[in-house]
Length: 198
Image 1 (cartoon, rainbow, N blue to C red):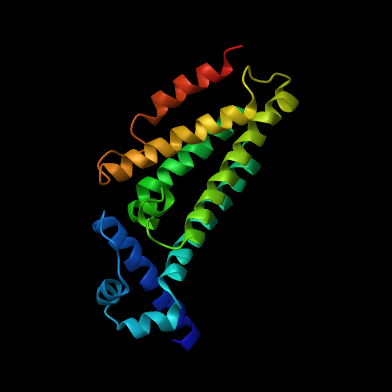
Image 2 (image 1 turned 180 degrees about the vertical axis):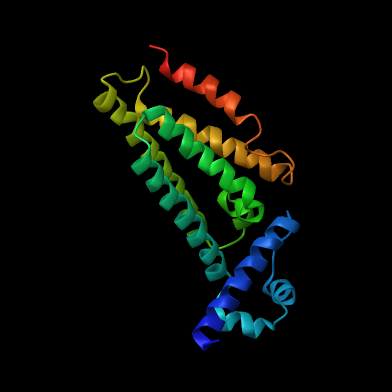
């Protein structure tokens, strides 16, 4: 294996170990010493791949952003109906959280307490992008379907995202016992009917 492939493989191994520790050690601060022990390398070896722990978290945030934003773009290109788009975006967030419990602690900010402020800012910006995308989808309803909503689309987008963030927070708070997708179909049916009331 080429050295660049080995380096990439080791970087991925470190990020996977960090995500695993976030899942199995809720409420505990992860030190580079503990992470190095989990990976089976020295702390110096960790720093050869990442100059700081913040960069390791950034690697996981890159994964979160790439995963979510690329799939949102796919939803928008494949689905044209407004409410179906909103449903798929919310479901994407909840399914992603459920499949990546450790990384979800980064998504809801729990794992970033005491870490570099820049990391929290990036997660904040990710949620801002998702909210803006939802707002755009809701605004396009009037253009596509000739009928808008009773409430301002910005307020509705905020409400939808708050629902998803609440489910994600409950998942983390329950130490991953309360699945964020549990009851989603029934809850979405209710939310949808409320949004569409004229």
